[in-house]
Image 1 (tube, rainbow, N blue to C red):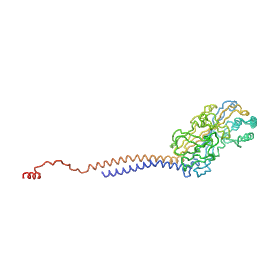
Image 2: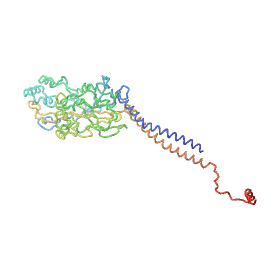
Image 3: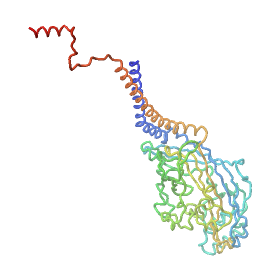
Image 4: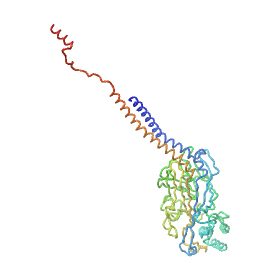
Length: 500
């Protein structure tokens, strides 16, 4: 029995030691294994898991467009406050894919990314054939652009506008406003003021967005330095743009807005947006989970579209008006266009109060990105921006009436998408579940080793005690001779010797 206990205690001790060694090994080596797998699979390399996601984005993206219909155009011409009514959404399925992918020797890759949009009637609140009253963008934009030209030029344009029956507001279909319509005004303006609007043919607010690319991006692949993966090296061959008035504002920072370097910290993230003609910084808001995947949520700070007075680093984006709008005329053919959050969310209250019908709220109008911090891959996002036109009375152009100066919202859109289906399952298994399993195993092994070693020690002690109890007893050492007896032979011999 004792021998069996000894053998069992030795076995338990060996098992405990083995589990302990495995736990310590996983504790020391596990994070390195996980990091190696992440690095291997997020860099821009045809053998990585994320390369297919990067090349042809499998995530279903949707662009929802909301128009602001002007309900009182005649009153606005007389100086009244515009009354707006939001129409939509008009939803489009967005497909993105890359072409001309070229790898370079300096750890970079160049590409063109295209977008194709398809109308989704079942997801929309209205059809593309619906009519909406909006400002005559070409006419009102050209009028403001010509404000400082000689009066005879403005009178000439005003006469041409009258001959073409152009008015300050127009009633056109959603499809025409977005994707273009033929307008004789384009040719007339090019004749009167050559170069004022350097394009011909159709005019549409989002005409250049569909079936077009966002420029030639060159980004880091991360093959040599994973902390630089997806970071923009150049855009259209330029290291910085020249739209703005300061070097800081002209810098091209961050990524192309699709993925970010792995092992993110909860601070901020940057990306360059060709649509906004600038780099944008989003800030960390909170941690969360998307379909079981840990995420960091990044949102736009209040300073994103602040003017130079409220936020001096934005001075380079001026000339500015109120905080909450950004003048993008310098990269939009000098047209008086402004970018903002929908409904002027986070903007100066004066912008909201200048019109009727706006109701800004964080839940509906704030943009956000939920990113898996270990890989830098977005899991869920919704980018929301609003396009606005500055309109006013321009002397010499009678079609502008007595319109009071106002930044008038035209439309806002939300580009939204989230990882789902087989892509989400593969992502979760390879980049979340397996690393999590390795982390749990190290603690399980360490947890098992302790009770096994304790049990082995207890059994060994019990075995030693049993052995001691069963061993033969030895005679005690006598300090005195035993009491003598009359029959003891030695006693008789001693007495006989004494008598002699």
